[in-house]
Each structure stands twice: as C-alpha cells, then as structure tokens.
Length: 94
Image 1 (cartoon, rainbow, N blue to C red):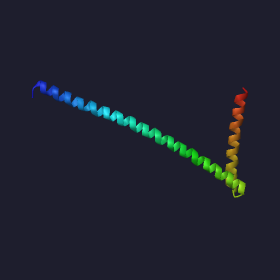
Image 2 (image 1 turned 180 degrees about the horizontal axis):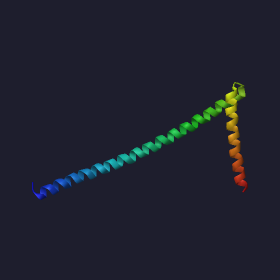
Image 3 (image 1 turned 60 degrees about the horizontal axis):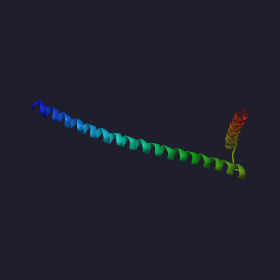
Image 4 (image 1 turned 180 degrees about the vertical axis):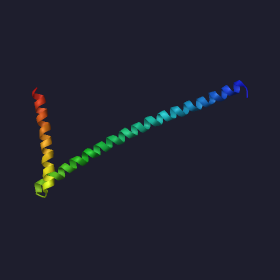
C-alpha cells in the first residue's frame, strides 16, 4: 500500500468514528432526557404515595382505628409541620 491509500483509509475510519460519535451523543442526550422524565415521574409518584399515607393516617385517627405507634408517628409529623410553620412565620417577621 502506498501512502495515499493509507491516508485515505485513515480518513475513512476517522469519518466513521465521527459519525458514530455523533450518533452516540444523540443517544446520550435522549437517554438523559428519558432519565430526567423517569425521575420526575418517580418523584411525583412518591409525593402522591406520601399524600395517600397521610390521608390514611387522618382517616384512621378520625375513626379511632389508630394504634399507639401510629398515633405517636402522626403526632411527630404534626409537630414537624408546626415547627416548619413557626420557622416560616419567624422568617416572615424578620
């Protein structure tokens, strides 16, 4: 093989690599978008699950079906919310 053929072969391989690189970049962007979407859906589902748990706790409390451990956990959550509200009020007062 002469030098021109080697250069042509190298150039062809380089072009192939550049095309593959561009394809991989597009795939990477697509996968990142897909991951972001899945993470947002998961976050929304976790939030929904937490809201449903809270509703169940409130319903149990209202019907008197809550055991002592559940009552204590419920009280902890209420106290946590109250502390957060107090902090917000304090920050607004500054």
